[in-house]
Image 1 (tube, one colour):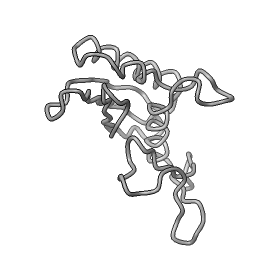
Image 2: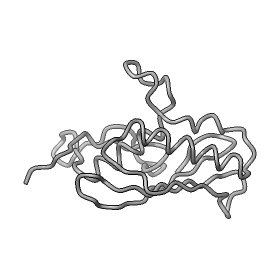
Image 3: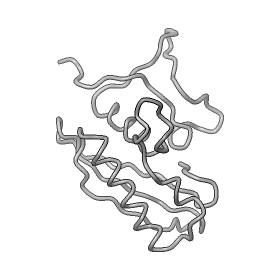
Length: 144
């Protein structure tokens, strides 16, 4: 069976690219552009959505997630609630291939200026559940 969803593989700098790895499009061992498919492509789309500020995409100026608005906010319950709202709103609007099961946000116990966001979702086509964890550094922006 061929994949239902396919796309180019991107390393998203704020989430899944090691510090010394090149970011952006990934080249496969044969020298072509590497691809992702099905659930992995959807996970990558979620990462790209969450890391995109509205206004960054020329043909879709409303596409993205408003997490950047929290950069200089205090790390408290209000900020966590806003992060939950921003992520849920972006995913429900721009990623119809998934069902949001739960979004949660809490202070990172290791870094007082970091907010950890957990997105539990289910891929509608496969019914596979997955979890995506991202962080927002409230002094510098979105980080892994």
